[in-house]
Image 1: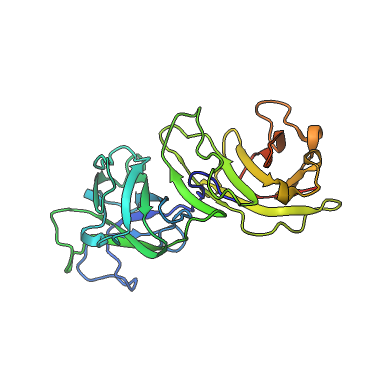
Image 2: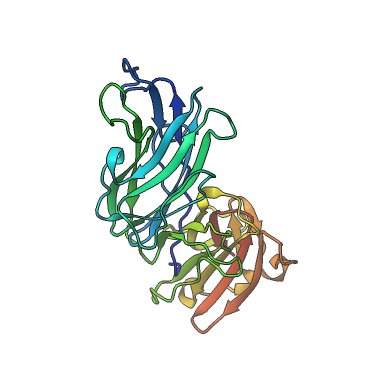
Length: 332
């Protein structure tokens, strides 16, 4: 029950907000004599949020930097693994930064690095120049729990301590599972739209069910994908009966996927038992996808439908299109 390449993507966005005027202390009080107020974190809880990932793969977090004060913040820098951000764990590396807004300059990353400094330039108070947006991809070597911290600093020549503190840091906890036949999460680098992010795995030959997602690349961005099929499928709508394991598939944290998500679910002959492949239907969320020809996709862009299944001596591969990610279960 494993996809060949990394698969969980999903992840919620984290934000960094820069506010001009006064700098809040870590206890949310205003420190006397300070001239800047930097807040770093997500919109709701001030923490970084990462897409699900398994060992040996990569995770992504989205960052928004915004000056919501009345003064221009000069010589801004977004840093990782150095200065106000502190060092990264030795198992964590920065793989890529993408989606940078105009005015954000990050060094070119050809091999994973343990520290990074991106120049933000002057962040004005005007709507036309008060926001920077970027996404950071981190590789993770081993399973475990890790804390990742980033920081935004302004007036680079100023002191990082004292009465005029000029930075604010945000962090988030990242839990990395072991990659298995049933679960895998990873960030896929950008590639042409004519190719796919995930193909069925040739590993875990004895696995009764192999599940994967196929998603076209997005320009120069890429996709974060996650697949987990460890749980037995239950609660299928009457009169259907579930079989095999439910497949939890997540693409870019639940973003809309164009033109569709393509699921590839291979059931061995052992998993199918006496079930006729022509009688296999699926339920995606609450949407029933009919079995056999009745459920076949009518056009190249049809969703909530099946492409013709492929039967081999070892089992049957079902190919399902849906308009979104989520949970899908086989039934008959």
